[in-house]
Length: 132
Image (tube, rainbow, N blue to C red):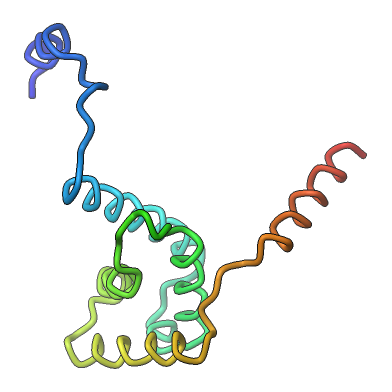
């Protein structure tokens, strides 16, 4: 879109009043989360050894568990699979193995949110360190 047409559009309509809803909003949140997760995961070397590492998978699943709210309506398992598909270009057989590994982690209650008390304690420690 050219600058002149965008400025003309902004004169006619306040674009801040138009918000995406339903499937468009869900898609936008999903894409934003994928970008955020890819940035966080990029801090670690994306070697192919990590593709089959259960500890790495658990780390990513816990990260997704913390970031996504129930109200977002996003399937967390599919988001993790999409992330792995983008990072490692997985084949369908590998995706099936990844799916069963995620299911194993979930059934054994290994994927869980960080307790609020632990978050509060961490925040309190940061505030105290800041004051000293």
